[in-house]
Length: 365
Image (cartoon, rainbow, N blue to C red; front, top):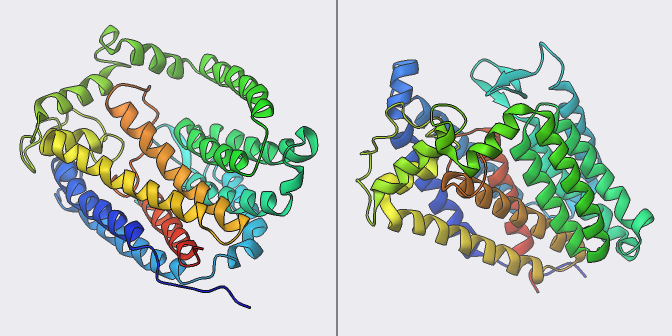
């Protein structure tokens, strides 16, 4: 007997579309000055965001109507393709360097970011792998090491770009899937200590990362260097107060705050829309995470449950890191705010992932 299918969870659709709408409005508000200065067109980033938003919505409604079990058949192939793109992007002359990282494939202004594809590819593969071998996950060498090894290989390739922020999101979402599948907390703790030691090694190996750590602890030590972004972000958030300066009235977007339309767009939201606007955004993310976890709990099988956990984990980890950086809780990592920041690959793949989550919600028990 086939699975009974109902309407998708409207409380996943509503916050997603509202966040997307806020994102389109705020991308224009945050980027108009920068776009006019760089391209002579205040609507440059807005037009790109609208194109990718439409593509993302089409992809979301497509995946919403594709049975999630289809992804089980293509999970291995998807992961193989993602690994291939991560290798190709590292080849000089093929991979495009943006923001100091060789993390893009494409021509001119349009391109794709393989690390974004790897996040959803890893979620699908781990969900398939662990749902089929769940009885082994409590074993260290036969159950836990293989998925961690695959995750570690992907993280290593992403770090060669280097792109620490995306790597951390990949690891965070993957570990949530592995833990949900039944991995022993003791094993994860031991491996976590090894991971922390490795992370410290990565920080020490790259002087710019160490500068970001010291700048995070006291950005005013180097206000025109490593601490500049954190300080300018706080200068944007502070004057926003309760209700903000008003939509379009940001001062920091006038070449003070770097990347106002991407990594630090939440700073502009807090500056223009105040505490109320920032809280509304966080509330929408909270509703999305809550309903996503509900879909995971009521999913018809382990594969669907693990996919839902991975997708919601990916979104939640990215939101926590982005807003943590913006308000000075974390070092600057260069990670976007889902559905809101300007970006092509990230926005389209996030909406595609939500479509898969919506399809799972259609089969809730």
